Each structure stands twice: as structure tokens, then as C-alpha cells.
Length: 113
Image (cartoon, rainbow, N blue to C red; front, side):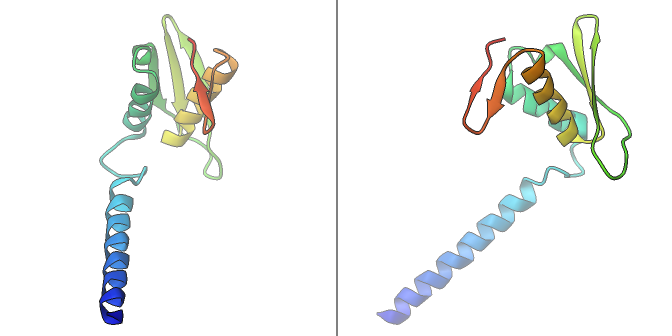
């Protein structure tokens, strides 16, 4: 009976390791098949599907040692620039927090736009 329990334990560890490896491979934010604008746009679509058409994401070159972002108003669009997808998402968060007075956090969201 003990060998059966040991076998089940080892099998479950193997399955967990395999599932984690497949998940980590498929959820890498720096995957080459997505550009930063596309990744940030998909985040925006999940977060604000009704308002996503008001935003434009653009790539800018940044300092090698730190991330940068810029926010600009262009006619009826909000332009969010960053040197990678994370900095573009940070620009979106900054815009929502300080211009729209909305909050997105781990503890809940308040997105009354």
C-alpha cells in the first residue's frame, strides 16, 4: 500500500511540474509573437472593453536601465507610449488613477468612467 501512495505522490508531482512548465511557456509576457502594443491593447480590451477604442499604444525607445512611459492627448484619443508592454500598462494605470480618478488593484476595481 505504501508503494502505491508513493507512486501516486510522484505522479502528481510530475503532473504539477508538467502543467506549470506548459503554463510558464505559454504565459511569457516577452513572447516574440506579440509586440508590446498588441499585448497592452489586449490588456486594455480585458479591462475596459467599452472604452478601448479611445486609446492608442505606441512604442518609444527608453533608457536601458529603466522603463519609461508618456501620455498624450491627440484629438479624441489618448496616446500611451512606453518602451515595453509593462511600461504601457503602467501608463494606462497612471492615466486611470490620476486623470480619471479610478483605481485598479488586487483588492478590487473602481472604474466609473
